[in-house]
Image (cartoon, rainbow, N blue to C red; front, side, top):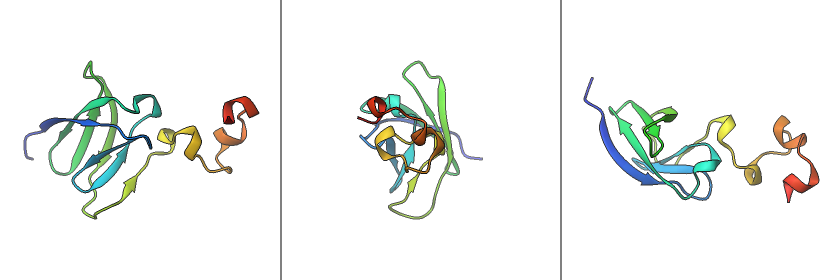
Amino acid sequence: MRPMMLQKELINTYSHIYYKYNYYSVPEKYISEKLNIRSNGKIMEIYDSSFNLIATHELSHSKGEFITKKGHKPKIKKNPTDSDYTNMTPLELA
């Protein structure tokens, strides 16, 4: 296995980080932050500024994909059928 490479990337407003032609999700609280990425070419690990692991993704070999874990969707992007969306109050939806 290749050694893990480290770099910093900015999280976009959709709660994703751009890496090797694809977008990978992180929890929405990290939107607009720069996070640390380590990858060995097969797996990507995403760390916060204190180097706590916050997400792991298998790398896609496609281009332009959004790889999103269920718990990482920002409230504004949740599907109305998602259980956490339907349990939200009108104030939380605004």
